[in-house]
Length: 217
Image (cartoon, rainbow, N blue to C red; front, side):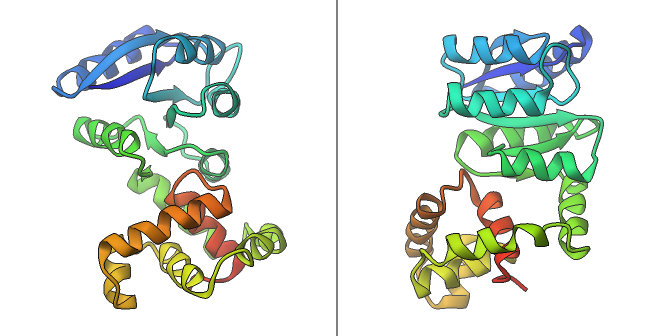
């Protein structure tokens, strides 16, 4: 079972999310919080696998709670859920180690799929959030991080940089394997090694770093 925490200051929203998630036979909602501070405290005590955090909450907002969760309970995968799709919120959530970003108008199946992806160690971006990330990259919003990105990428071998570049283009392990004439399992091994060396929590973080470093087209 995937153990989920829901954090939102609106009881009706929490109830709706709980109803959607519990309709899946592999997901269990084990805790609910009305603010970010409660979310951090509950995540540590309930064996949570995935935390769904609303961005706009009292006491502690979702993005700040995400940062605290990364320190207090690093094993918890975090999805940001909000009605607000501002570009900087999306990028900040991903760069802080969030496993994904969902808009509240997402379909029920998308919400369930995002939780499953996060629990499996993958990253998930709703189509709306993906558009914001793409816009930021296209307008050069991340160029100020280029120097740090190049420094970190320099730690990789030539083959690891090849794989990272394809992550930056958004390719799956299977597609990257075909491009590089490697098996999917070999690419997966490279990806795990890359994430460890770059100290990235997921593929999206690594892809953004690849873009910052100028590896991806």
